[in-house]
Image (tube, rainbow, N blue to C red; front, side):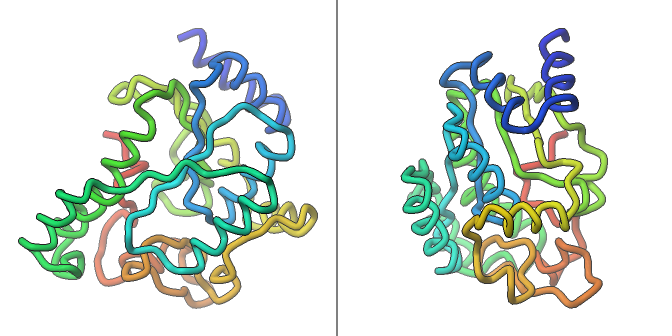
Length: 232
């Protein structure tokens, strides 16, 4: 696939801001960046906003987020004079799920947790990406074993789009150096041991030396993924 190879070469050989700008020019109005307002995503938001790159930034409000996430969103919008596109789960689906399985169903089984993630996160994501040709993410290879094996640029056959992970090979130290050097706003929970921040009931702080994703769904043995980045 010639375009796939072109994008791969672009992100492997050019600075991130240049690669993102050229991608936005290749797919005008069709490049979207999904942000959960974590540290990686805040780095990419800074790069996109600082360089005025034509990439749409969106986030998903699951209805179960920490208050600190909303505060971070507000500070980010004020800092960069921009607005996130916000996508919400479908209310009837959430209502039916809660009526049938309870408000905290995810503690009962992996299947229930995947159901909740599917309704609150995956379905809104699919709607958000429906008009996109390129999906930008803040994934880093260091985050867990699954992410070590993903490419910088890939073609998602199920979604008929390119998925690009510009920070894939960044270390945690490189990310933090960028945040400090550019005074990037970030969630204060990161300073309290919350490395990977998802929904409030499903996220805890981690201990020194624990895997960065250990604070997500800590009560179960799984891939530590909600389904957004698991492509079969």
